[in-house]
Amino acid sequence: EYMVEELCDIAVFLDFDGTVTIDDTTRHMLRRLSAPGWEAITAEYRAGNIGSRASLQQLWELLPHDLRLLSAVAAEVPVDAGFGQFLDFLAHGGAEVAILSDGFGFFAEQTAAGRVPVITNQIRGHRVLFPHTDAACPCGRCGVCKPSFVAVASGRGLNTVLIGDGTSDRAAAEAADVVFAKGALADWCAAHDIEHVRFRGLTDVQAAMPGAIRAARHSRYQRQADTRRAE
Image (cartoon, rainbow, N blue to C red):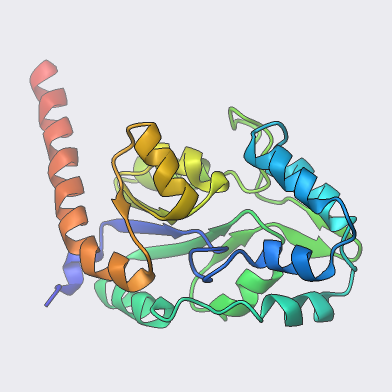
């Protein structure tokens, strides 16, 4: 059995849409409720022509500003069946865990139900707010600067784990010690020679994490030893 102390030096960052949930809840809401034009906006975002902040602001104008309706439609998307057990596994091991969501945010907070911190954008009245942008972010276009949270944890000496599936996870995948990727993120990591573990669901991640963490620790110790020798 995986011992408690073996996760105490780990910071786990979970994407929400398409990772905690089976499908992207924002895309599901757009399919169901949006005025025409959302496909062109999301295509511009995936192509890198606009950042997530501009994309979300434009998409918000195409949706009804009714959080009760939006929450009900978002709830039609199932949560990964292994999510609760995976959080139990991480809590038992003493890992730090946070959901990093560069979406509209409200459904991620509902799903987490206070079990883990949710770092996301916010809806206030008829506006989308971005409290987690980072002025030092190289791209300067994100709603939630995911790599900045990975970098802070790494700077505290923690081994960092990124679990994600999409465009908003790319920069964090470059920064993390361990990457679990599926879908478009896994394809992007493969194309850019970023080491990753491909997964289909969070049960897969839970099963593969002990081995991946051991390898990450070994790499970190090796880098530290190399630095000491160089000094």
